[in-house]
Image 1 (cartoon, rainbow, N blue to C red):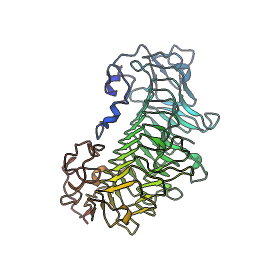
Image 2: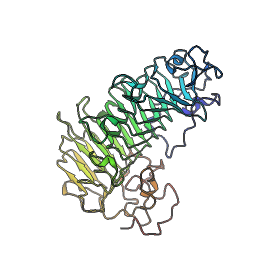
Image 3: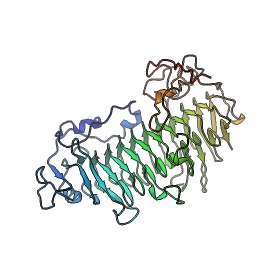
Image 4: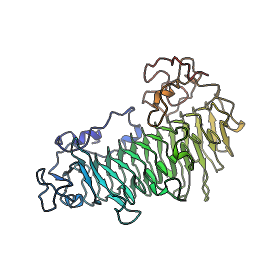
Amino acid sequence: MILPLLRLFKNRGEQCGIRRLAKRRRPWPGVVAATWLAVGTLSPAATYYAAPDGSDANPGTLARPFAAISKAIQKLSPGDTLCLRGGAYYQQAWAPNSGTPYSPITIAGYTGENPILDGAYTNPAASGSALFLVQGSNVVVSGITIQRSYGMGLALEGPGDQALSVTSQSNLENGILVLGSADHSLVRGCAVYFNCCNNQNFTNTSWSSGLSAARGGFNSTLADNRVWNNWGEGLSTYECSNTIITGNTVFDNQCNVYLSDVRGVRLEGNLIYATPGNLWSNGGSQVGIMLGDEKYTPPSSDNTVVNNLVMGCHNSLYYWQGVKGGGLIHVIIANNTFVDAAGDANLKLGIGVHARSAVQNNIVSQASSIPIALAALTNGISFSHNLWSESPPLNLRGDGDVVGGPRLRAAGPIGPGQLEADYFQLLAGSPAKSAAQALPAVPVDFFGFPRGRRPSIGAIENGRSHALPEPSNGLGKP
């Protein structure tokens, strides 16, 4: 039986457990249901405690907690919980123990307190290691802060592992990495920022990422996270398959979202943007969505990019071919809203051996003199029912296209952490309304509302989210 994630924690004690996650702005994509773990509502068998002023000679009770997190984790069996009291833990943590899908191990912050695992840039001893390494399966980490690691912040390596409401910041390498055999893992509701600090101010020729699912895993989900100000890719998935990336807000990273060497990835319903003059735009590409193949392991194919909102990035979407070849192979890029790129083009498709791919129902709007699109070769890609704010190159035009301003609401704050999806609402009289082609791959819009028989072009359906007035300052009108 597959049950909603939050029911797993329904019967846990109030002192320690999973912090209540914010309500999603949109339902999970239908495909996600098939990747969720089968979880139950079993109460934990035992609860242990650790505290910065505890002692490993203690029994791990609330009154007499452990000091070392790794020491406490050794006590945990399926269904058990380790509750971390607030304060700074200057230590490395390792979780080799495993739970089960119906009875996971939980490591969580004490309610109302903020436990901080702090590497002070001395732990772990070697780069490439994690300050908090989870190698057991079905382990849930929740409600803690991980910072200043000499390597990575949090690494999940076991099947069914979960990171919920974790803050990972100021680490030299990755903030949160889902790695290797961590199949069917979930990272949700996390704040991931100012990581990849070994590349701060673009001092290295290689770098890590803020939040990634990578190298061997499949069916992982990265959802409802906020990812910003990372000195590398903000949110990425590479060398794996069937990752679901949905509901995230990603802004002002060196590169915001990156898909490389992946198959079956679904990138849906994310808010992605760059703010003018941010530090991470000076030496980085700061692309909104980048697709490519670095290693060709596996060659990318069968990926879906739908219902995303992208604004202010170097390119809204950019495909590039790696040194070993590749192209857009059975890729759907549909019902996205791409607004006001700041680089060499809004939509940019590099050279590649493309096949069975489609670019449909997208809004591509560019107010400045920057080209609306650049494409080297488009053989193997079909274009149709896109709205272009100006005429695109001949090889990108297709049936059902609309040329003209999209009449977006374009009102509200647009600073770092301030942009909201309502900025991209369609106003009355928008030529994008009811002008799209219905696609089985995109049954709902950004907010999860059904698209119906006459859907609109772009990520947000006609009048389907909030009853918003037209802006009084006239913004968003063509």
